[in-house]
Length: 295
Image 1: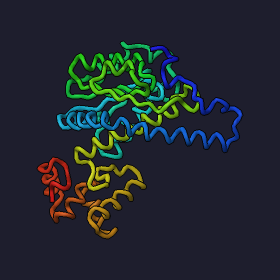
Image 2 (image 1 turned 30 degrees about the vertical axis):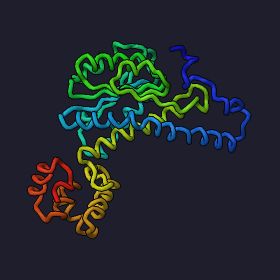
Image 3 (image 1 turned 120 degrees about the horizontal axis):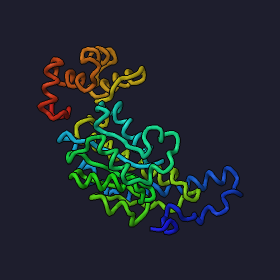
Image 4 (image 1 turned 90 degrees about the horizontal axis):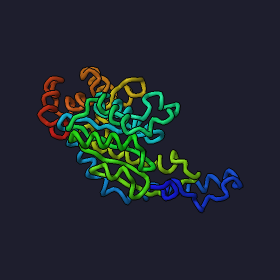
């Protein structure tokens, strides 16, 4: 596919005089463009749903969710993966983000890394990818060789494959069992896919990780009950979550937070079912880690 045929590379007719706008006018115009993103994501919800089901199935059999991309796409995958650890209390290995060029590419562009299909395969080999895992390739253009190489390798060993692109008829869609193609229109600044395309990708990644975690019991009502209290703010948030989930007072929440070895979910089950920490842990195992299954 030629670049001039990609929506993400087209000039936005609504911003042709961008360099003549006042700051206020530019802000209004940029906001108008950004509002198109959520509506574009709405159009692809039917394509996102089966991917979330596949991620939940992967998690339930001990598999992992692997994002891979280059540039902004890669950075967004790394970001979403990293935030799953404190938010949902999962091991860093469970959701991982690969970026073409490695960790240094998070802050400094690594020339040519995204143009290598072989590098995509090599990065997955280093993770010892198995057929229990799911690989989600992310590419705004929909044609990044690094992502294509990864998807080809993942498919060859039987791993589930999905993709997120910001152009219709994207090349990477041919290599993914479950492709998402979102079209939010040309960028506010021509070709700057860190803008609307990046926002669209972030919204979709939020859905993939968050709703998948809900599907394996990481949420009670709308509370993040597996949060890891790694700093003072999160310690206080943990106590508030216990209070909200059990309708108890602050002191009780603080006491049970300590009794449960700072495990929010355990503390909640202890309070709701009036059992010891050990009994609460057993209830959660029997209930497949869903709090509501312990009640």
